[in-house]
Amino acid sequence: MAAAAYAMDPQRGEQVMREQNCLTCHNVRGEGALKAPDLSARLVDRYTPAALASLLWNHLPEMWTAMSKELVGRPRPSERDAEDMFAYLYAEHFLNPAGTQARGERAFEQRGCAACHSAGPGNPVENWRGIRDPFALVQQMWNHAGLMRASREQRGVVFERLSARDLADLTAFASRTAKQAPSTMPETAQGASLFKANCGGCHPGIVNLQKRLQDRTPLEVASGLWNHANSMQTLALGAPNDMRSIVGYVWNLQFQESGDAVRGAKTFADKKCAGCHAQMNRGERVFSTYSMISLWWAHGPLMQADMQKKKARWPYLAPEDVANLVAYMNTKP
Ligand code: HEC
Ligand code: HEC
Ligand code: HEC
Ligand code: HEC
Image (cartoon, rainbow, N blue to C red):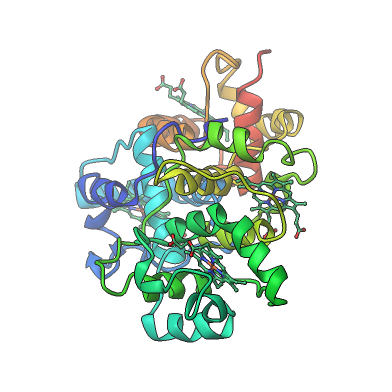
């Protein structure tokens, strides 16, 4: 479901957390109060939207209790707010640190770039244009992969694989005279059609990336992409942000809900959701993990009050329970 229809925006996510009063109790990056867990700590091992949703759900009753004590306005994040908060918390862990020039210069030598880009046939690094972020670097390399391969074959140069860190460092080195772009999430909006046109011939046919790319950061996706581009024919990407969009789309694949509706039905019964929600208008709206987060904030206190009245315990939901519930709620009865 919901491959983000707009760019996930971590900067906006930071703003949302401030506006939604999260920082009156929580601390993020040294800002905010210390009455609740520090949200810039790595909260879960696998950082996925479902994991964040599960954490939130399991802590909601305590949070509401804290809120009534603190007299804080109750947060009402929208679906989009939830998506941007996820992007922000994710970015906090996986997009920094940026590369350094010194390491980039070393990588330029050690990964063999200097062999062709100091004395030719490749352009000297001073003449590379527009490499303000690692995705732009990968795009340039992608567009020149054919030429690079040809000159490699002529000269018998071995091509080294690049890691995510190499990409960040090489970017810092290549753009040392320009102002580097801040490290942000790649946009996902345009990515689907670009991916289909450029990659669809082999994916998912030969390799199903959604299965393969678990726990990969955008930079790791980009380096994996370069490491195989280097041995195959590539079509040039035209617009400056194309690679960024493709990487964003591919990276986001791992978060698309892959819940199981049949198991979700069982969870819905086992966790006693069914006792209060006979039908839930299943299949009539599109639920996503993010819309669940939003709805829980909106309806949670009523749910909690109802549960207390019925002496029901707040059920524990694991990340896979959240994903399965979403799948179940998206299927028509
Ligand atoms: C009135 C205080 C308060 C506000 C406002 C608040 N929280 Fe919390 N939050 C808490 C408390 C207290 C806990 C710990 C609850 C527990 O231990 O079960 C918590 C736990 C959490 C956790 C789980 C953390 C962990 O380490 O397991 C997350 C995630 C979270 N809050 C996110 C948010 C977000 C996002 C917002 C804003 C939309 C928010 N909170 C607003 C008090 C608050
Ligand atoms: C075997 C030779 C060879 C090696 C090794 C090589 N390149 Fe290239 N590269 C080329 C050629 C040839 C071109 C196309 C001519 C040009 O535009 O520089 C090119 C083009 C590029 C471009 C586009 C430059 C521009 O002006 O837009 C970038 C960026 C680039 N290479 C980066 C790298 C990096 C980073 C490495 C090391 C990981 C590397 N190359 C290794 C031969 C090589
Ligand atoms: C000619 C077929 C082909 C095309 C076209 C192709 N790929 Fe691949 N791709 C593969 C194969 C084969 C692998 C597995 C390579 C391996 O195991 O090293 C792969 C692996 C990958 C990986 C995983 C690398 C890793 O680290 O595990 C990514 C990411 C990827 N492709 C993205 C793309 C994107 C994005 C495009 C389009 C811009 C694309 N591929 C186009 C054949 C292709
Ligand atoms: C004790 C009764 C009770 C239980 C158990 C319960 N809920 Fe609710 N739920 C409510 C109430 C009451 C509302 C608020 C309805 C309203 O605001 O109109 C609600 C609202 C919701 C909403 C928003 C509905 C909407 O139409 O926008 C979602 C989503 C939801 N619950 C999911 C769940 C899930 C998933 C479970 C099981 C883990 C669950 N609920 C268990 C009583 C319950």
